Amino acid sequence: MGVREPTTTRWRFFRACVFALVAGQLAAAGHLLAGGRLPDMPVLLTVTVLLGGSVSGFATRRRTGPQIFLALVASQVAFHAAFALTAHHDGAVDGTEVAAGRMLAFHLIAAVVATWLMASGESTLFRLFAAWHRVLVGSRVTPAICLPPTWTAASTDVCGVARLLVAESSGVSRRGPPPVS
Image 1 (cartoon, rainbow, N blue to C red):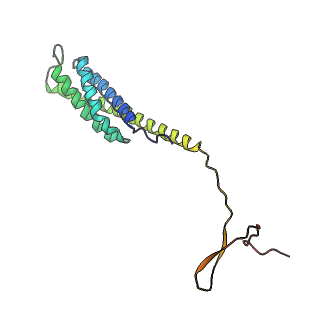
Image 2: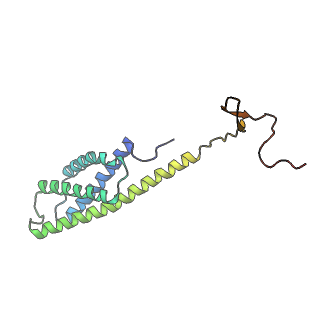
Image 3: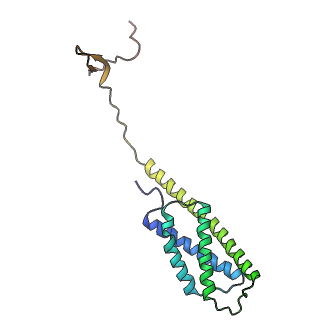
């Protein structure tokens, strides 16, 4: 019959990878736009892989926009912490409150943008699977089985037990108004 939803193990892995890649790239862009330094590639890849593995269980069913947003905010915190711990601070914005507020704002903007992208993609993917399922189910032709009735009325025998009277196979119908002579 085919798969109704993209929630098999392979699809969950694929969706988790896409989530982690989008979240990682937008976190790096938000961090850079806020005045932080572009994270080292090994750090970005490591956090992306760890995030992808941790959200694969999250992909067991379709997620709503708010659920995706909360997961992305948590991922932005994880990415920011990893970026901040591994930053070399040469030429990066200092640790003042203004810089922290700007960094927070850009990470939230990245989470909002990623939520919009991920929720749209999630919705599209699930709609495609539903359409594909309808095509597969609609292409199956179920033969109609038309059997004539095997009984026409119930009566009781001398013991008071109900039994069915079997219709004659001559094609005489006992239904409808009586024939006009």
